[in-house]
Amino acid sequence: MIQNKLAPSILNCDFSKLGEEVGAVTRGGADWVHLDVMDGHFVPNLTIGPVIVEAVKQHTSLLTDCHLMVKEPEKMVPWFAKAGAGSITVHQEAATEIMSLLKLIKSLGCRVGVSINPDTSVDVLDGILADVDLILLMSVYPGFGGQKFIPHSLEKARLLRTKCNAMGLETDIQMDGGISLHNARDVLDAGVNVIVVGSAIFKSPDVMQATSAFKALLA
Ligand code: DX5
Ligand code: ZN
Image (cartoon, rainbow, N blue to C red; front, top):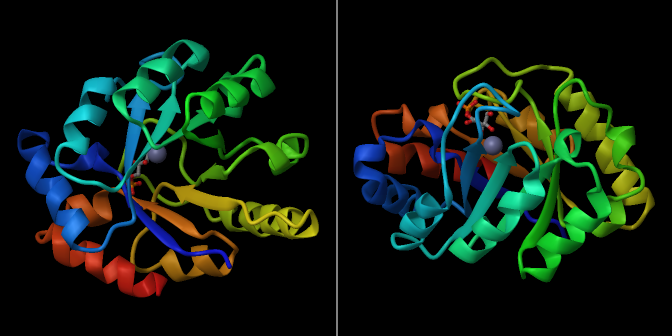
């Protein structure tokens, strides 16, 4: 049985009170905490390093879901594993030796994820589906929170869930970018079971209440 999960992304939280923000999503019923790691090369923005994973872990026992939007991910994967990442997702577009990268993540005791950008076809994942715990489909171009959801992402999710079902795999299918209370139902209906929500939670006046509202939708 595939469970629905809510993974608030702290990218747009108030970093001056990170602990309180993480506490609020935890109390609101979040399942994972999503951390957007950007290196200023793979994407035109620079964000979170391993010290933030350590800081988040001081305020929650939820799984830290690290989304690495970086070049040469093999260099950084061990840093995030050491910081306590529960799950590490790398971009297919950034990987040169994808299988060895996935093995590295697994060998470090983390859940294994692979992400693809909006313009990358789900077919590129055919050879690795059996080797991952999670596929992250980007529903915006990675780099910034608060962007508009790309509708074509729903079709990709449907195709990917069909492929997983055909292989007998209960892979987590995660979607990230532009998800709000207005489109979350469509996202779930397309076969996604893990939604990443950034600004719709952290830019709302009551972070805990906003988290609970998404959580209710997932039930
Ligand atoms: C974009 C990030 C997303 C983003 C989600 O590169 O991977 O996690 O922060 O934020 P919203 O929900 O605001 O699109
Ligand atoms: Zn993300």
